[in-house]
Image (cartoon, helix red, strand yellow):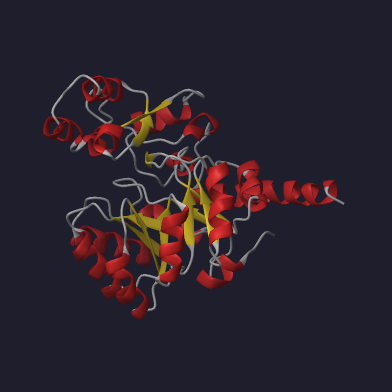
Length: 314
C-alpha cells in the first residue's frame, strides 16, 4: 500500500485529499472521504461561519477521522471562518484564491496543519517561510479558480522550491495520475472532479449527469478579464459569460452575471444560469461510486504502475 510523509503527518491511511469545492464539498462528502482513509475537506466557499461550523459538526458525527476545511480567501466571511476552524479544532486547513499569511500564525498556534494551494513558485516559497505544513500545487487543468501553469510543469518546480511535502492537484482522476504525481516529486494528490461522481456528493442530478457524460473538450475558462479565471463545463451559461466578457460588458455587470451561478448549478441544475465547475479530467469520470471506493481504487491502481516504473529504470 502506498503511504507517504503526508499520511504520517495527518494521521490518514491514503495520501488522497478531496478538493474543497464550494457548495459541493459539504460535511457528508468530507466525512465519506475521511472515513475511507483519505482527507475529506469541507469547502467554506462564500458561506458564513455558522454554515461551516454546521458542516464540521455533521462530519464529526459521521467519522472520527481527521477532516479539513478549505477557506476561499476572497470570501467576505474569510475572517470569521478562520476563527471557526480554530474553535472547532479542525485538523487541517487548506486555502485558495488568495494569500493566507495573516491567519497562519493563529492556525499554527491552534495546532492546525496549514496546507495552502499554490499556483506559483513565489507563493510556495512565501508559504514555506511562514511555516505552512505542506503545499498543494494545483495546475490549470483543475476546476474552479485556476492558474496559468499546468500540473506537469508546476509540481516539479514547487517540489524543487520547498522542503515541505507537496500534494499534486489538477488533472488527476485515476491511478495513472497518482503515479505520475509521485514521479514528479509529490507525496500525495488532491482530486476534486473525480469526487463529483461520489454517491455521497449531493450535487443536483443534472450536474452529476453532465460530469458522467463529459467529453475531452468539455471545459472552458472564463473570468480572465477580471483576474479570476475559472474552469467550468462548456454550458450555455459559460458561453454567454465568455461572450459578455469579451463583448465590452462593464466589470460590475460582469461580476453580477456570475454571482450565485455555482449555487444554481449545484442546487438546481440550472443550465441557463448555473456555472458547473469541472476539471479537464471530467471525461475520465464515467461511473458513480462510494467516495471510499474511489480513494481505495485510485491508490490500488497506482501501486503496480509505480512498481513498473522502478523496474524500467533498473
